[in-house]
Length: 88
Image 1 (cartoon, rainbow, N blue to C red):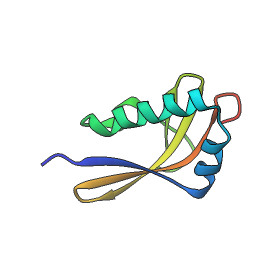
Image 2 (image 1 turned 180 degrees about the vertical axis):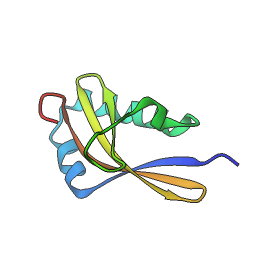
Image 3 (image 1 turned 90 degrees about the vertical axis):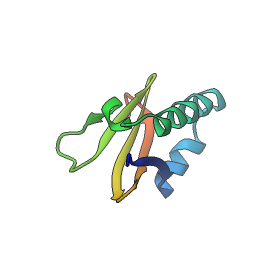
């Protein structure tokens, strides 16, 4: 049985997301919805060095930093930070 993936925002990520422009928010949400539907979304992400088990999704000029939490059939991808690539 394949695993399901789901994104959840941390408190800091919610603040980061709220500060973005509406068109950027729509683009990020659309991409996250796509990643939830694919079989292995972490294959689209870059593993971050120095940060244990954290990954970065590139969405245009923005980066979404996630930490996977494996719960048997569901992997929750906790969004830790969202921001422009020059800030992350």
